[in-house]
Amino acid sequence: MNASTPATTNQTEPAHVVVQGNARNFRQEIVAGKHHLSADEPFNAGGGDTGPNPYDYLLASLGTCTSMTVGLYARRKQLPLENITVSLWHSRIHAKDCEECETKEGMLDRIDVEVELTGLLTAEQHAKLMEIAGKCPVHRTLTSEISIRLRPAQKSSAL
Image (cartoon, rainbow, N blue to C red):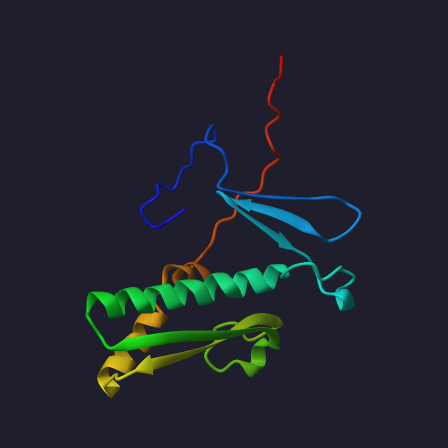
C-alpha cells in the first residue's frame, strides 16, 4: 500500500504479500507480487538460517526506501550524487537510556541508520539529501501510529 492508497482495502482482491510456513520450523516462503523470497531464523535462534529473519526484512525495507528516496530526489534536482549506501542496525535498549525518546520506562526498539553518499556534492546538497533520507515513506510509517488489523482468513466456499 502506498500513500495514495485508500485506508480501506477491497478484500476480494488478492493479497499483495503472502507468507506461508508450517509448524515444524521457522522457515517461511514469501510471495510479493511476482517475487519469491524466503525467511528464517539464524541457527542460534533455532532456525535453519535459510533466509533473512523478520527484522532483517524490516531493516531492508527501511534501507531500501531510504536509498530510493534519496536517489529519486537527487535525480529530480540533478544533483551529482553517484552512490548511496545505507547500513542499518536493530537493537533493544532501556528507555531511560534514550535521551530523545518520550518513553522513559521499560525497553524500546532502536534502529540506527547510517547513510553514505558519494559524489561531488556541496555541503548544502549533502545536508539536504540527509534531510530527505529521514522523510522516506517507510521511515514515516515506522515513526507514526500504525494500525495493524489482525483477523482470521475468510474461508472460500468451494463447490
